[in-house]
View 1: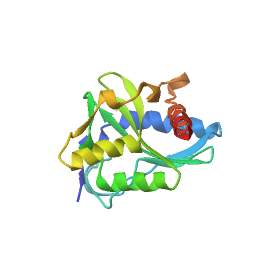
View 2: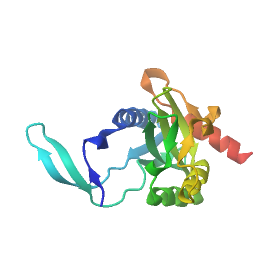
View 3: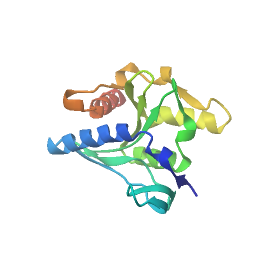
View 4: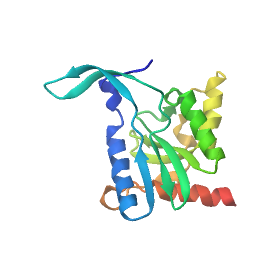
Amino acid sequence: MGYWNTRGLRGSTLEEIINYTNELYRQEGIAVIQKIPTPITPVEVDNKKHTITLAYFDAQSTVDYIGIAQGIGVCFDAKETGLKSLPVKNIHTHQMQFMEDFNSQGGVAFLLVYFSAVGKHFFLPVEVLKQYWQQAQNGGRKSIPYAAFEDKYEILTKRSGLLNYLEAVNTYLVAKCK
């Protein structure tokens, strides 16, 4: 059983940017993508600050976001790292299975990764993630190096703080169809 504490807020700025982007996508009729809440049961509450300080997870969640863009299903998890690599331990077995299943049904499953050390965001397709994840499960490398993130999948910040990750999804789909 997992427990949530104040470390559970890591990546919240990234999620705020993604939520803002998703709202703009919805308003412009481009996509409907929603944050999937993780079900928790509070254990300790700071009544003065009206915040949960300790909780346990009720169930395993799937991914952070799921939705549809121009008729194509998308699901992804948002990850942030201060390192020059992404630790594979941050991707759980049930998440990997969900993304693979989603992908096998014709959807696009991926990680949206922010490297805070270099200030860059990337799209990482589930196929690439799976290679590193399996290596780690078999005793190999335990992280995905920064060099594994392709320049063509860098996600640039656009007008008004929009993190236009659907451009990277489109680049991926075009390459996949070739």
